[in-house]
Length: 170
Image (cartoon, rainbow, N blue to C red; front, top):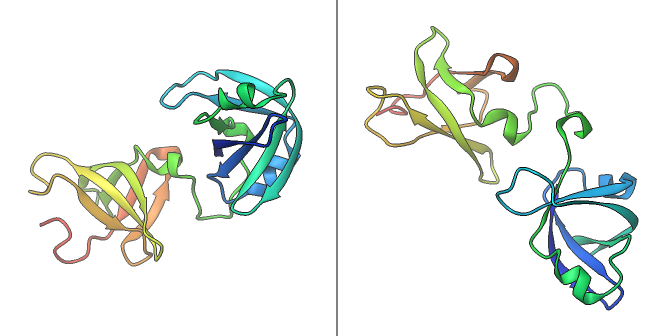
């Protein structure tokens, strides 16, 4: 949901850069779950005392974090929520973690590879697929996330169905 970017003031507030389409959600949280980067288990669960918007981020005051030194220890940590705490998305929209790991195949069932990353380009997302041996000479195939190419996404089945554009797999 976000990353602790800096301390703010001398009373222990921290500045958060939101990594979510729903930054207003921070105001509804009772506590924040903090993670060290690249670590799967939370480092801490700290009650949230207050949240307010500030320029391109949010300022959070966490219970027990009452000074700059305590707040500085949180810099770089990530704030995450569990899957069951996610905000529901409209039909046909998916979270990035739901896309990564899907098997990409054509409508007739030709298996192409596995989605390893999602690039946000501004115009549309691009799915990075690591092709299976013999599918392409490329190390990565870039699939534009547009309706003409991506025909169906089925996270529950682990599948993404595409209709490759000419030259896409060459």
